[in-house]
Image (cartoon, rainbow, N blue to C red; front, side, top):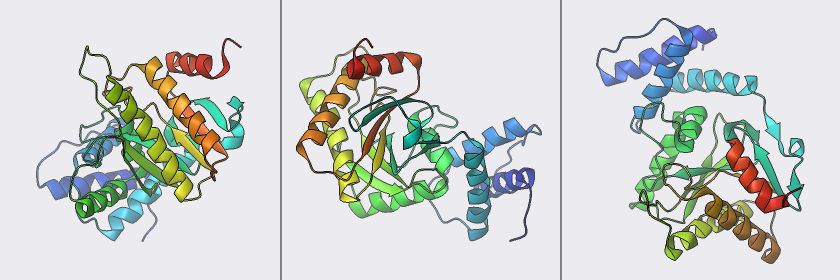
Length: 264
């Protein structure tokens, strides 16, 4: 493949995805708007064969974006109690063995263009191969993923090695979680920990499962997450040396900090 610059790569990827759709789409001239268009086209693309040329260009483009980010390793995360660590930042910049994706039952990623859910962010940064692998898993399974279960895939152009996808309970707006919902959320964490141990992983980073568009109250969810992980680590021989709770907002950070470390 002939080497091309970033702008040319972006143009190539956009042109490829538009040509697949066989429709006319106005392409902006400004780089940031073009980059958003590429992400939107990736978001709405259903699983299907991709040319090797597309994959080569996409992987080079996304990997270069990843390498330009301020990546964080386990050793960089200093707030810790035992094997548990707390970190505030973008989960797609964590250079760990696996990150956890809060998926939906179809397990194919978010199809809403530019949506800011963690599912969309992870798939957009990993590349279209992630949706393809999830599609193969779901076709083989031949049913929706159960709430509380989890599956592992490659991470492709992310700095992590794997992505573990789990489906958390969805709480109707204005309602409180039931005991069944709380048990299902705990099952998400246990399922991810079991997979990590099965694969001999040393580090695993959790997002706040179900606390976004699935409406699980954050403080309650954080308590379930911490208690479940602590119980698992206390009662299992595990390959894991570090379990990271990754939070994004200041509010989430303070919630986890209080539950993990008290008022210190």
